[in-house]
Structures are given as C-alpha cells and as structure tokens.
Length: 133
Image 1 (cartoon, rainbow, N blue to C red):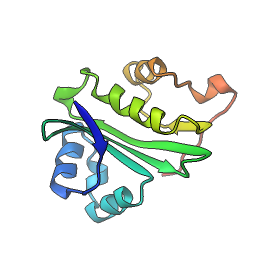
Image 2 (image 1 turned 135 degrees about the vertical axis):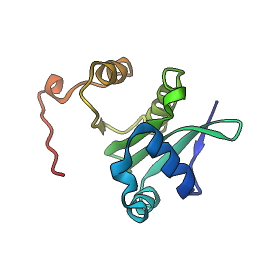
Image 3 (image 1 turned 90 degrees about the vertical axis):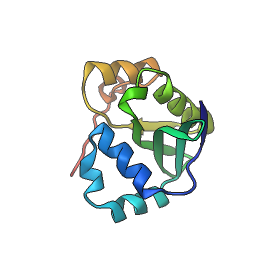
C-alpha cells in the first residue's frame, strides 16, 4: 500500500468511493464536493498498485489546528490497515499541531478505532462540541 497526495481530483473515482461507503449526501452536489477537495489543506489517498483504497481529507490552518473532515475506505478494504495508515500519515505530517480534531458516527467500532489511534472524546478533555448542519 502506498499513501500519496491526491493531487488530481477525479469526479468518477470520488463519486464511486462516496457511494460505496454510503456518503451520498456529499455526492448530491458534486461541484461543491470538488470545491471542498480543492480548498482542503491536504488530501491523501491510499493506493495498491493504481487501485484507490481510501482517502483522507484535512481542513484547517495546519499550524494550530487541523480537522480530519473525511476518511473513507472502500468497505471491502476496511479492517486491512488502510484507515490506520491514512490517519497515521496525517498525524505524522502535522505532528507539531496542538489541536487535531474529527467528528464521526458514535458507534462502538468508530469510537474504538479512533481511541486506538490516540484520540479522546471531547468530554474526556473537559470539552464539548457543537455542530450546525
């Protein structure tokens, strides 16, 4: 597996990945999704040969805060280290950033996954989070 910057947005590839993981709310407006990718601080992709396995997208200033906006791994490639490799690549790239955040589904699997990578729930840090969508 190779992790590399996702430099050339491929709408078909992104549409397929989002559809496979069930994130179709994003694909309802493909021009907005493309703009989101273009305006991201960093987008990394995991490949095996030239097959896309997953993507991670980061927003923020890259100095004081980053937010892991998206991490998507094809269902057939989940639980094979792809998501872990993508997260670790981001953590290595931004090792000096004090605040690294993400929001995710509140399921035992996702909570366990992110905790295994050193993340804590906001409440464990004496914080809470808010969202408006």
